[in-house]
Length: 80
Image (cartoon, rainbow, N blue to C red):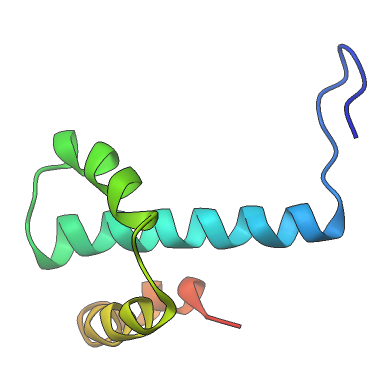
């Protein structure tokens, strides 16, 4: 709900969707930078484009690759 000059408050559904978007974006960034070795200067823009095209099976596959590479950090990408 929007309140002028007080920011925005997300509903529970909105919060869940926002978390999914952030996870996809961060996973995309990590894959591009850590697996494909693309420089961080280009990663954000490419991740933005990639996150919108990723399907659940692709995310699961990329997550397995990333999990093998950086096990501890990969825990934040837990899919539900």
